[in-house]
Length: 126
Image (cartoon, rainbow, N blue to C red):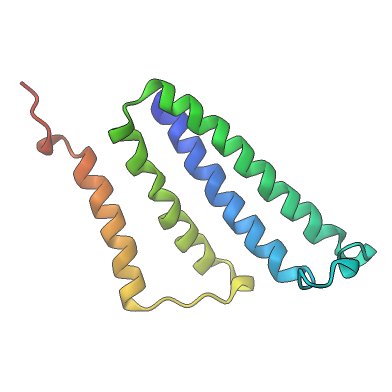
């Protein structure tokens, strides 16, 4: 059950990052607070609120995961959020993200590291 909470936390924090990125792309500059109350910016503000709520829920899931999993197994799972955000930001055309070979290699290294931590051959099963 601890892994389910951890995966839920990873998914929610990834969604939060994407929602907040989209909202910040569509909101006026932070130095123009009067423009934020303009009625044309209600959708980005709602998306921003959704991202903050997703962060809050992610933290709750993380608390539950930490109650059930050792920290040295739970914490590496958080790095999967970097992978999810990288993949989805590349797939969402509105973000205009570009990836170089070095960035893709970085994502592959993160995946390899998590795999090494959880691969059964690396554990002593005696």
